[in-house]
Image (cartoon, rainbow, N blue to C red; front, side):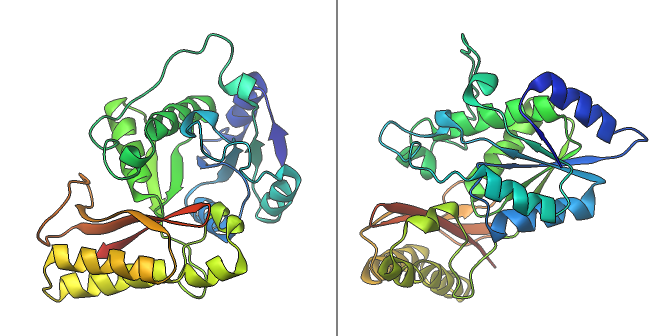
Amino acid sequence: MQIIRDIATLHRAVDALKQGRKSVALVPTMGALHEGHLSLVRMAKRVADHVVVSIFVNPTQFGPNEDYAAYPRDEAKDAALLVEEGVALLWAPDVGVMYPAGHSTHIEVAELGADYCGAARPGHFDGVATVVAKLFNQVRPDIAIFGEKDWQQLAIIRRMARDLDFALDILGAPIARDKDGLALSSRNAYLSAAERKAATAFPNALKAAAKAIVGGADVADALAKAEADIVKGGFDSVDYVALADADSLERLTEFSEPARLLAAARIGKTRLIDNLAVG
């Protein structure tokens, strides 16, 4: 596996991978790889001839009081996992390569980024959209794969790619979950043993709410019960639990398909997100 840190070398390497009309799939990550990331890599291997994984902890998507400095980093371990998966190229630029001196452009996907995590983390999705656009231009993949765990992020990236005429396919990969139902996340490493045990209240509450809504329960009542169950299960607070149109992300007060439950909650020092298809 090639490990590349400068754009000129990256372009030459990707051009070589594409010789003979071969296809390239990109899996963007921030490192601290776990089974969820590896499931994206395996999906990429099924749909493309070569897989490129990027590792870049993007400072522009972290707020001033968030965990940028503490975010887990272990490139050597990540690289070893990617070699085992047969990844062709690891793109691992530093901040100076991604945001050279004088960088002053950002991308805002206004409507889709305003609610949910966008409201709780102002500027977060501007940072996401900007870095992903740069990754698309740098790697020039035929396909890009993102996990469905951050459904709002996936919707924003799809809209950004459509609006800016990026010529690639964007695929969503199903959420990878632990045996007890908790969505896999690099931030799960922050959880204490007691918090990790309590965290199962989060997906369990969403599953119960989805079942109730499909069964005809009042949406507002089902969402309120889910929020109460999350807090009762040991979480300190809930940022939001919402039923949304799966495509536009518009909040729904009555159930209609396609719909998605979106949620974020805080336990200890950790903020977790999850979502679930409804219907």
